[in-house]
Image 1: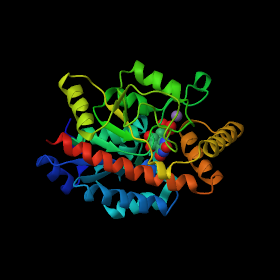
Image 2: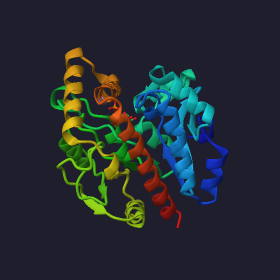
Image 3: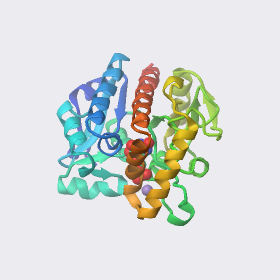
Image 4: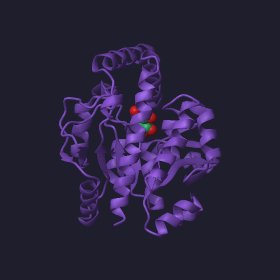
Length: 305
Ligand code: PSU
Ligand code: MN
């Protein structure tokens, strides 16, 4: 396949990759569907700034006019943030039609990994990933993010997963698919808003160099698939477990009562939780993304050595 036919790598990103300098990919569904305007745009721009201050080059990934963008301009980020949920949330199955129609799309963890890999970017920072939803034994609602982790060689650095998901089943699924789950400085899977979930991770690694070494070994062994690095939210920004779990339970109950399903489920729950916690969850969400961007920059730097 001719990559340039569909892919635009921003000049700065292309130059950094050519020079073997660190690049960190960022997703755009977190901008359009994960946070409200204008905090979404402010966060997206700030996270790019943080990556630069750590000596790496940010590449916000999205689809603009049917083009796969590895690196968005500030105007493109503003556009995605302002349009919000009007922009199509694009998972793997949506990609062909969105590209063929020349539409805009916000990339999920799935499509951000896919495009990062096409562009030659190995490290991707975000907030949380999709996973096995509660009740998946009847709904079969399992995020395509898990399948992408199983097949695309990109490291995803996140703050664990929210308990809108069934965290135990999510870990089981990742094990089946052969995806290493790393705890950064922790032996426990972080639960996004809180540092602990009660579930153990496969391995605790404590430095960016150790994480980079594991990823390098995965490549050199010829193993397909990515790696999930879970980085706990900094203590000072973590939420009270009872408060957040109550909000999550309420949000899940409301989603069920309203019959919300399919790709609407995750955005619905995220917005509801934000409303129920009076915006506290948004502050935590923003801070954990910054924290993940810092770690991703450090790991990407190690991978360039
Ligand atoms: N979880 C979050 N914040 C997010 C998402 C998930 O805490 O913004 C977004 C990501 O883009 C993720 C997507 O890839 O939702 C998963 O959607 P679904 O569950 O429909 O696969
Ligand atoms: Mn789903």
